[in-house]
Length: 336
Image (cartoon, rainbow, N blue to C red; front, side, top):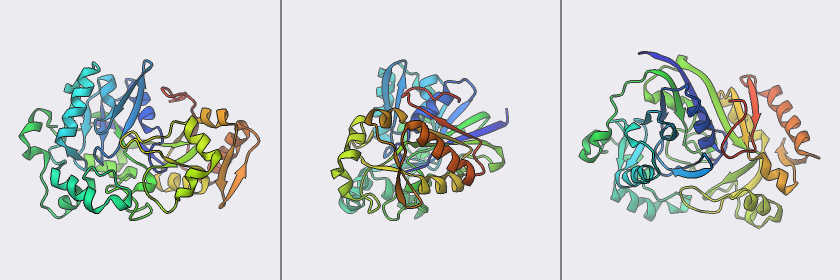
């Protein structure tokens, strides 16, 4: 069987954009033969709602919830202990973990990587999962790969892609090692071109789903998200209603109004064709409709006015975009 099409879901902000929901919605459609994660490690996290139940993953792709082969790709990094903890959790929830496969080329996060991360990188807002030291060793060509770890033998992927493939992004555009606010970034490529590391040509790409929220959030340290944001009463209310705490770290996320300037840049450079904007219900409940555009805060009179404004600006400036979808539901996205 040959590759038919590749669809990609990436985050357009600083992570935590409801990518998991989008990927799970696509995976349950029955249209995909594989769901593949292309970068990062257990420093990321997805929260999934299925049949009214809430589940969390950190490394395993969301295809696992719908019995779709779920591949941890060659540019991912794997903490073996954490991986098996996640497998046990998924087994305990009734999911068939035989669908999980790991690229033999993925690199292994070791205890010294984690210790070094805690000691040297916490000032950059790292999750202290050993990700940066692991990637450093990969590029220094002294790393350990998954194929060298006997414990993972039963999960080895044959590195064959076939059928229709869904690629799962981790973190978000502005955390990319190159495009983000360096050094307050992650240690891997979060842009959709990184998905080609799974082993397909870019000509196979059909749609790029870009996930964002109706407001911005940021976990960890970043001068672009100063600590004072936590003291803003309106933004704190948005964070409380939106339950903005990190899936991986549990840290309270800093909240800011949607920066439409940054969002449009991310859409253009990523080549996003379908934009999904989630958590519309949060601003509805708070009753505030603000965003940042052209460097200043703009206030809309209603959610409908805000949606019209966002749609018009994106349509005028982002010519790859074919569709903009708004979502207020934790489990579904109407239109995909």
